[in-house]
Image (cartoon, rainbow, N blue to C red; front, side, top):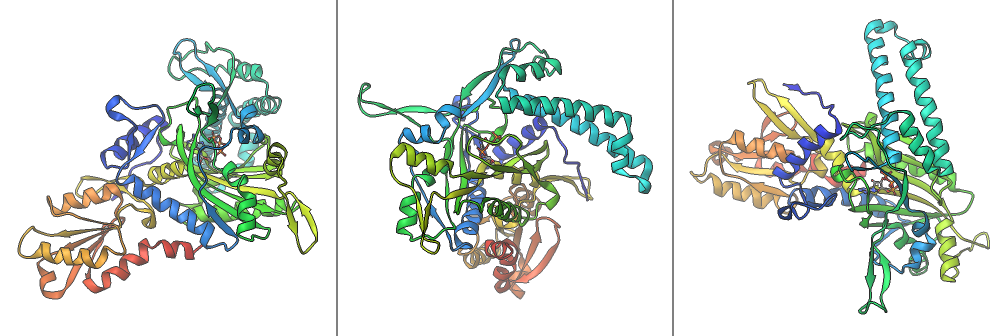
Length: 519
Ligand code: ATP
């Protein structure tokens, strides 16, 4: 059994994954029979369960494993002043640039970052070549410091990076364009460097609320769930009698009018976030920031998708509200990209809501006998981006010994949409009835599929394609010995198991409780 290399370009991967996700009921383009709606997707019968399992893992890790974290579910519509207070009306912008030949629109910052990524790739290739050439005696640090090709590329990277960071800090849109022109960064569609100026573009969707045009108020679809937490800070703190430090968690939809709409569920216009705001005493924020970085990394690595596939990326330019920020990046097959953000948001949000609403938002610390506006550490992860990370990592093509190929989704078992498939070997001789009994034994604990169509081989392939960890086959021997054949998705090994032992055996591998216990 060999595994095909998983490195693909973003376009290749998206092509393969989009097709697979659609064929097996994970994700469909929104409004497909009307030719779709850009950057909006629907979850099908498999996708919805994967998504639900991810949300449950997060929700329980936050609210059940921390007695000082509670959850809320705030409305999507909020008072429009909230978005003035939060800075989103004034500053929630992306720098956009158009290619005059292809008429395609891009984020100028993303074009530059991708260019930097390509230089990094070239350097890594040189290093890999060096490692191959020198074998055991290879000294990477020395190679990087002396190899002329690496030095040349590194100098280019440094130059572009320094200009980019300076332009970001100064919000210098003309300089963004100049970096693109000077480095001959071309449009991937037209291949030309014929660019417009860079403009700011606000990402919030607007609609109006009210029955008459004159009386209507402009309101925004929330671009993040966090503000629903901030404006409920007092409600939760008082009614829950919460003592600092404490957190409020929320899962919900967010909306952003993203400029680049070619990235499948990596960047959507309607998406779901899992955010937790942790309220702390001013001055303790860097400690808590470090603690939450560690806790969130542990949550990810605990899924078993390889610790080497995650890394922190500390921000050099901080958002208007932050005094420290990092991303947890995941090694997607198209490179390391942001999966989750962790931000030290100071008292920016609560302070501004206090100013804009005129309501006092303070915490009285009974032990120290002082009042203050709490500081906040935020952890923020996209459910959909997490789904993509899981799907992209799990998608595996294997060559079998008989020369056939199988496509198997090696989804971490506790997240798999279907935990077990139950199949009678044939559709007669009383086997379906026994299989039904097996289903009755398992259905209260596990999501399952019953399948009696086609050959067993074909049925296995169907389950592999949706990532079902176990297939249970009822055959003629079952009628005699009360045992079934259990086939493991990843190893394809089969073992005979007594029907009454099935539940415990499956549970051991697919249990979310065990996953939580390891945190
Ligand atoms: P990016 O730099 O990729 O635009 P961001 O830094 O604006 O992301 P945050 O505002 O920190 O993202 O949002 C927190 C998380 O929400 C991100 O880490 C990501 O997982 C998710 N997210 C943000 N925007 C989108 C989107 N358009 N589609 C899907 N998920 C998103």
